[in-house]
Image (tube, rainbow, N blue to C red; front, top):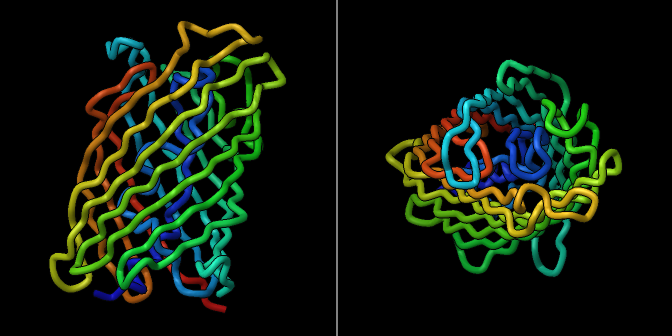
Amino acid sequence: MNLKPLCLSALLACMLAGTAFAREPGTPAAMPGGATAAVPVGANPPPGMYFSSRTEVFSGDIHDGSGNKLPVSLDVKATALQFHWVPGTEILGGTYRAMMLIPLIDLDVAGNGNSGVGDITISPINVSWMLSPGVFVQTGLSFGVPTGEYKGLGQANLGNNVLTTGVDVGFSYLKDGWNASIHANYFSYAKNSANGFQSGDELLINWTAMKGIGGDQSVGLVGYHRQQLQDDTLNGAVFAGGNRSKVTSIGIGYSKRFGPTELNVNLMRDVSARNDAGGTKLQVNLFTPIKF
């Protein structure tokens, strides 16, 4: 199996900005569900500079804590522009990379729209180890900085107005034509100085099970599970019974390589949603090395 093109997919171990109504109402998640679906997250690409983009179109509705659909629609179009640096440096026997991501967002919440740059993500350290040929693990640290426009509690915000800290662990099995990967992300949100709101920590697990179908193509299943582990609070008091979100999604992914460039398309449907948005999302991803 040619691991180099697959390793380029690790560029997509990154974040779009998507909007949902758990955590502070009207603010985006640190990473939308499925953001690293179809990505062999355990493996870093070969040394070099890389660019990738992930464009997502989401349409759905807000669901309450019992999973009932509310009369609040949500439509999001977003593109994440990503830049990766892999200098060839080793840390503790693993390969090192750094990443910066700039999200461009257009959203509509029940007819209330907003568009612009979201919260920029800086990931200063990601280290990947090869456990055996074709088997990789990875860990990293990221920071979401409050660069996106924030209007106030419950409005159509492009950013969180807080610093977000993320830690992640990834595993990839890249043998016999398979990309079997799982990516666990833990996010912690600081308190919003504008209103005293603090969103609870959350766990996001993206997963991939794709198989080569001949040539430079692969197809398979992708999905994610997001769950908020702590209550939201407002000025120290529990907000709306905790307002904890929980979403599960499944879909199909397709990838095709064109030399060093790879195109990936994912179509996913949220099969369960509580205190969050549920609907359908289409992702179109492109990534390629930067030649100087």
